[in-house]
Length: 427
Image (cartoon, rainbow, N blue to C red; front, side, top):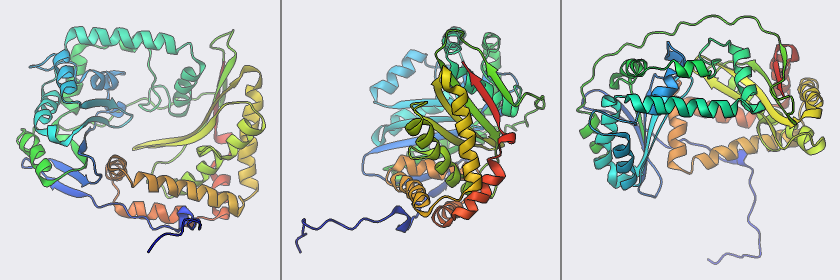
């Protein structure tokens, strides 16, 4: 049957579709290590993540978590940083290391056929890194140089200050980089943190792409034979937050022509029943290009090129932060408009057309994510690392589809309260 191309196809809202997370396979390697993997996609590529309890939450000395992750692949007992880099380039692979607030991740991106050659090198990095003294000193110099440049930027300073204001400067989520903390890093600090927090006994592995049972076998042949030494991770101890002013205006550059605005409050993490409904409210408020904040402060007032609000859920807490950069002379006017938009959401329910647009945006984004193996893996990883099952994904979809304007208005009255927000303006 031929298609009549003179007739346009029917257009469907994303809210009309059914959503199902592709199934995840679970394996236990020969030595007991957990592996979660999915077979998806059509290209012979693979991503493997090794996730450790090695984020800022676990460091006893500031700046150590980032430094350990940053120097992880800069030398082992068998290979130099240059040799490791050359080997990765030879196979066209990427190995990324990063430390977040709670967890640290080592990610390998490669053609699937190169896994047998690359996995032993990754194991070596995860078990035999030595953090050479000259690499540590080079890292410190580079970080300090970048820091000195960044401290001249009002947006960088504002990002530092708002986290410290919300959580406290000594809280893992509120700490920010200082020159003296970088200078105080020692090789033995990194080795101790590495041994205590990058133990394979505490790793969780995730693999996605065009993956077969043979690829799982390759992983088991390497990591399933590794010796596991139980390494308890001690709970963090930090000073409680000291009282700070709710509003702070900081002069960072007397000649600066731009101001950075950060307005934020603490907000529960993904386990709180208000989190998923708040994702919808935040999207409407400032979470996408068609949001209230963008329509008012960019499109109508012309104060900024962009403004957005975002939820940052961590394992042990979270925040809601509005951020933008404006011309120096309109910073206060922009702040006033932000609070006006909060009041409007508290006092007036969104109309049906606007709410449908937000729902379609959120659900359409999920449709896009479910089309690629790496984004599917990321969805599953977020669920597992937060202690959820597939049922949480289904609950989220149900809320996105069915939440009402009245429910969003009540949520706004609960959380978009000016007096509970901290405000930073840096010029």
